[in-house]
Image (cartoon, rainbow, N blue to C red; front, side):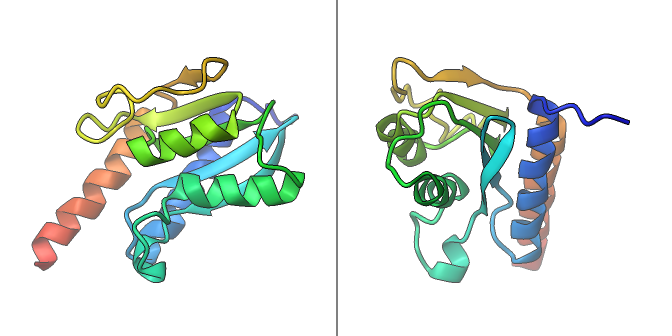
Length: 149
């Protein structure tokens, strides 16, 4: 069977990162950055572990991809992230000039769409890829949090 490297394939990889965050008691958001069908960065939220509000999955992935590429711009790269980027992450993605952002589920309250955050004019935004899986993981995490407190 031949692997098909499409948005679903790479979003599944981002969901694996989100599951890793979940096991670490982090808000389960995962991200991968891809160029030429190759994953060059994998990341998940680390805000609790690092005690750093900026340690979102997207921020970690941007840094890893820039280090891999040896430059700050992510032209031709695609970010796959399980939840729509927040305003902070969208701002960093703007400055990275990433080519495409693919997200799973919307963040109706804090997402870049709801807050009308501008992305780079050349950045393509695609949403709803494995949306149910991403939403279910986030919901499960916060339901468990509420029951523990």
